[in-house]
Image (cartoon, rainbow, N blue to C red; front, side):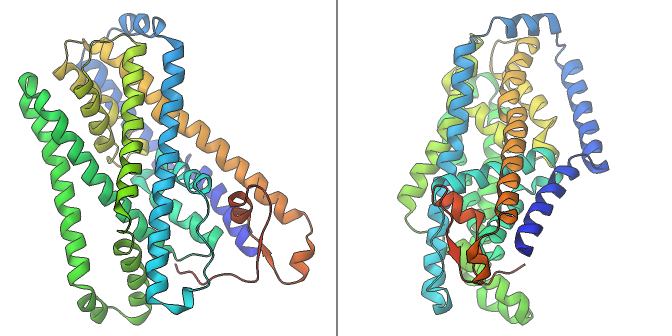
Length: 379
């Protein structure tokens, strides 16, 4: 019962933090970015509005649907990572031999979406930590091990982004090779940094454990297991990851077609991946940096004016940013209501010392299952 209360209050805190002073300051900074966008590219809102009014609503609806399939692919991939890490932990620790199975794809996809929602409303991209927190609270899993699976997810994404950029950049160097190579260099630098981190984790585990106190060493061991233990069954992981990225490419391609813009497919790929890199800016959802950055790249690599580029950015960010806030908030509120109902409804199993977990209800298609106790997690 206390676990449910913490989970509900944590979700409420997440919503309230959207209106704290740091969040409001970040919105002010984002507004400054948008002012820069308007003045730097000489945006004519009349032209922008005309471009928006002439868009194809059916293609825009298709773009929204395609965009949300990325959460299915990413949720399925994360589920494989969780299964890999759990199996690795079982191989290393007999105490985990009776751990519950990893929930289904729908549950994992929900948590991925909620992580994006947290990124969209808060500073410093804490959505991944929030996703790991929810999984620990609802599944009794280790927070450290779960964060490790998310780091493995980020390493896989870095490989895929670098690979797709290597394919796209040669088609763009004729117009502005400097900007194209810069984006590729940023991606490769990130990949190299993550590769060095993994190499250090692989070779320096014993040295790190000697330096850490025992309580922290236990958490690092779980983090190590979650990260390196995730790299199994890499064929399905790579395929699901690629499908997730191609869903995002497909979204932007459909937006381009809906606005009837003359943008090549390699540039669509490039803009999608550059968008993802710009979201690393620690404003909510990369707000401000993404808009100005993507608009600037559109103007550099195409014949479109700043006003038309602004229309593209507005439509795409409505899908990738505003809709995430709306859908994520609805999902967050819906889950809270569902959990409250489970807490408020008396259940005979609670009298027997059993705990009904809302996550197992979601994973089992709405039929509640029980656990005779909480699995040991960590902070």
